[in-house]
Amino acid sequence: MQAQLENPDQPTITSLVGGLIEDGQTLFKQQLELFKREVQDDVRRTGDVITSLVFVVAATVLAAGLLAVMLVHLLQWLTLWPIWTCYACVAAAFALIAGGFFARLWQQWQTYNPLPDKTAAALEENITWQTKPK
Image (cartoon, rainbow, N blue to C red):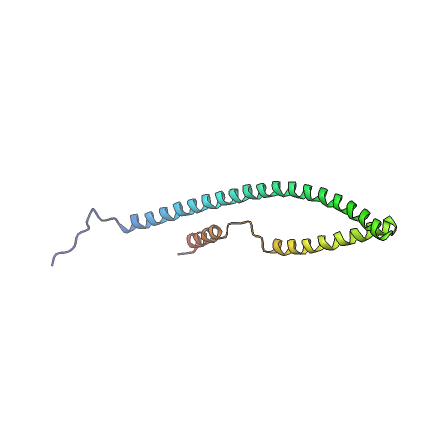
């Protein structure tokens, strides 16, 4: 039997392991870049939503203020109660409505997560794989 000689065209174990390590580092860099871009995109979108929300809140506050004054005068005209009583009744009604909206907003806030979960998990897995002792 002939002894098999090393084929110069075949890569060595060292070059294969080196290639795997290089590929792992490249993958890690790409995942880090993807994570960075997703965070930047989320921050940009959050900024857009906040800007719109500020305008909506300002218009809503103005409309609610005018509606409250109108309701106070309507209640006073209908009941002939003192004006301070009408203001108290309308303020209590608005406080109950605001409390309901706040409770709903609080529930939504509890489930909000601004980080990109999939990329973060892949990045964490890659870090664990690369830092695991061999």
